[in-house]
Structures are given as structure tokens and as C-alpha cells.
Length: 501
Length: 116
Image 1 (cartoon, chains in turn yellow, blue):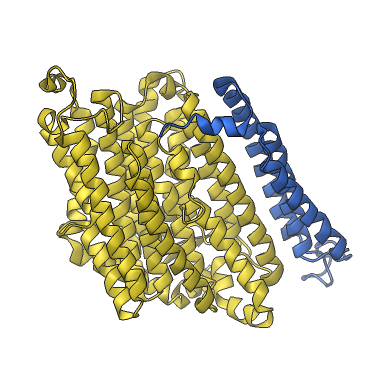
Image 2 (cartoon, rainbow over the protein chains, first blue to last red):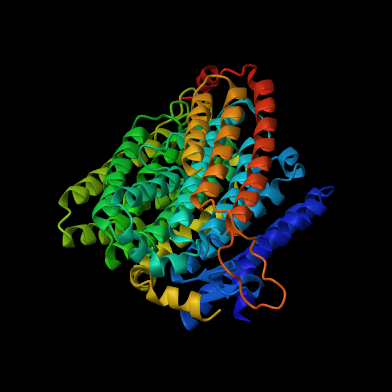
């Protein structure tokens, strides 16, 4: 029965995607299948998290080949939290897609691709085998390539080329690292590597091991959009329809962060003086460049794109500090960031619906016209900037606390300064789009005529979750701490994968 | 043999990256093709090149007798080939559509279409 719950996050979106393909003639049918599929996925992810909390780490060997020979699916608390967030974002964005995606894109397979993407993301979080992780990455990437280019507008094509090229290079580097790792260790099962990699590393020249670790940092770093490998992200994320940007912003870079955390807590833990210091330096530079990029932008979605980068810096800062508290803060930060950032993109779609542009120089008067939307923007925006009592505050508090405990004062100063600049650019969106009067607008109240009700539902849902993560910070941080303890003590993970198959 | 292949792989990587850095969209695709082949050879080489028996248990025995060739790298390469084949097919289609939409295959010009 446990195996059944374990396979559902892959099986449900796969079924939904195939059914949506079969129903390609009927747009209404595709929409129905898509919504039902996303709801079932969310339910399955909730049940899976409950199972993991009750029974501990779950593992299953595909095709009954015992680990480390077969492909292992394994879910610990960190994976289960990531899966639940995937289900949640999938559900919110699918509701949003019903109104945001035009008929032409829908009949050309949007819903099917959407679920293939969710399948790739879920598979990446579930797998216990590095080569299998590469395969799930490719599933996710191909679906995202098509979603990025679907519609074929000029800007989309230009964005898609950059996005596709850099992600392909990242895949190649990942595969290179896998080849070298297999040559050294003779296995690619993560638990198996975790149990014997320290011994293997001791027999090899340190240069080889460091090169290998750096290859992994670069390969996952491109996917996660860390400094200096992030250029594809702000060049492409503002080009597709808002629902697609929101889905990408919430999930895709987080898969890279997840892979970094998994590999650098389970496998490469013998040389933390080099690897984790490097990650910490990258984290600081990622925060700074991301936020400075955001300050200089004048387009709603491009500001948000640059903020993804700076927030990724916080997420890997916890990995660089590498203590249970820091990892817990990272996990909490990921949960906070996925909900808040997706929601900000969803708000940008509602703004675009009213004004047909996202250029902040042209926008204005949104607060007078739509006070409800303005309030719903404020919740994720202030949360992102880290104002108490919203979720971002507790996430940053945890990271700062972990940094102070380890006397890493420089990174703490950077984190706090970047937080201020984040507030500055959120205030810029607020001032330009919501607060100032729109120039040359004959009657700002005329916007009230456009119904935004269907936009408000998913935005309100995610805003509610952001509030919940903030107000229930105690229990949720405790959950993140349990997940971090499992990451910091991988012996349980290794034992369950290798001996229970 | 390893030394020769190491140089071949290095050469393929260099040529692939060089092609990807050129301005033409088509050369970008060729570069990607070279890189994927370089990686496949790398996996093949990294997992040791030995002349040995195939990894099939002889009749009447219960375990493999060494030395035997490791079958896993070949399975990995096969998967990687299939993936890079399909991704290349997609990328060629994308390049064609992009050429149609933007009207140039010069990657420097494509950069200029960005909205700031």
C-alpha cells in the first residue's frame, strides 16, 4: 500500500497528460481533465506527506530489482514537502490557466504539457538514483521548452532559444559529472553513493574530487539560476503567458535547488571546507546580483524574475552554512518562496488583464481601481521582503540565526542588506503600478467593469497559504527542522533504501 | 586506448563549445550534437575499456565469472542517445520556427529583440 502512495505523484499527472492528449478535440474536456488531475495530485501529495510523517522514510524498488541495482523511488520529509508544494502550485496555476491561457494554446496541448511538466518535477523529487534524476530533468525540460515556445510569438521565440540552449548545456554538464562519478564509484544510486563515497573519495586525488563536485555545482547551478549562471532566467521568464511564467517561477529553479541540497547533504560531504564554502560564496553573490538586477528593471515580470535569482541565493545559503538549523531555514524558505513568488506572478497576470501591459512607467491607479487586488499583492510582496509577521520574516530569521551561530557575519550582513533592497523594489512596483495615478487615464474606475473574479480565487488561495506559513511559523518550522535532521543524518535514508528493498 | 579517447573527447568538447559560441543558430545545433556525442564517449571511457566476456551467466552456473564487461554504461549511453536525439529534433524545430518569427538566424540580432 505504501508503494501505491509513492507512485501516485508520477502516475496521476502522467494519466492526466495522456487523457488530455486523447481529448484533443474537446477544449472543455481537456480543461476538466486538467483540473481533476491537479486536484487528485494535490490530494495524493497531502496523503503522501502524512504517510511519511507517520511511518518515516518510504522507499520502493521499481520492478523489484533490489537497490542499488534497480531504480529506487524514495521519499523523505524534504521530498514530501517539495511534492506537496508541487501539488499546491499545480492546483493554483491550473485554475488560473483556465482564464489566462487563450483558446489556441489550450487546443494545442497546453494542459497535456502542463501535466507532463508536473510529472517531471514530481519524478525529480521522488527518485533515489542520480541517472534517473537526469531522465526526470529531461522530462521536465522538454515539457517546459514546449510551454515556453507554445504560441510562437516573436519575444517567446527569442526567450525560448536562450532558455533551451543554457538548459541543454546544463544537462550535458550533469551527464559529464555522472559519467565521471560512475567511473569512480561504480554506482549511481544515491543511498549507495552516500554510504561508500567518503571511502572512495579518500583514495582519489583531491583535484579530481573537487572538479567533480564543481561540475555538479555548475550543472545544478544553471538549473537553479545561481550566480554567474542565471542569465537565461530574466531573458526568458517574461515572454510566455503569465500562467506559464508563474508555474516556472514556482517550480523549475526549485528542482535545481533540491538537487543541490540532496547531492551536497548525502554524497559530497567529505570536503565541506571546499564545496560548502564555494556554495556559500555563490549564495552571497547570487543574492546581490539578483537584487541589483531587480532594482534596475522597469517591467513587472522582469523585476519578479530577478527576485527569483536573489531568493535562490537565500535558499542555498542554508546549504552553504550546512547545519541542521540552516537547512531547516532553507526548507522553510523554499516553501515560503514558492507560494509567494508564484502568487506575485499571478497578480501580474491580473494587472496585465486590466491594462494590457506590464510596463511600470505606463501602469498606475491600480489601488484606486481595484483595492482587493492591491491588498492581495501586498501580502506576497511584503512577505518576500521579509516583514513580520509574514512567512519571509521567519525564513530569513532562521537563516540569519544559523549564520550568527556559525560566526559567518559577512553572509549575514549580505542577507540583511539584500532584504532591504528587496523591500525597495517591491515598494517600486507598489508605487508605480498601484499607488500613483495613471497618466492620461480618462476614468480609473472604469477598470471595475472588467471582472477579475476568476483571477482572485487562485491568488487568494496562495495568499492565504502565505499567511498560514507566516502565522503557523512554529509548527511549520518544526516540520522543516525534522526534514533537515533527516538530511543532516543520512544514515536512516541509506539504511531504508539499501536494506528494506 | 583511454589516452586516445581522452583526446577525442576533449577535441569534441572544444569543437562543440566553439560551435555553440558562433553567431549562427544552425551552428548552435551542430555544437549541441558534438557535445552530446562527447559526453556519450566520456561515459563509455570513464567506465573502463576492457576486452572481456559479455555479462551473461553461462548455462549451469549461478554467478558471473570475471572479468566481464560492465553493461550499465552502455544502458546509460543508450538512454542519453535517445534523449539527445529527441531534444535535438525539438531544437531543430524550434530553430526553424524562431527563424520564421524573428527573420534572422544571427544570435546577436535575436538578443536585440528583448524588451527592457
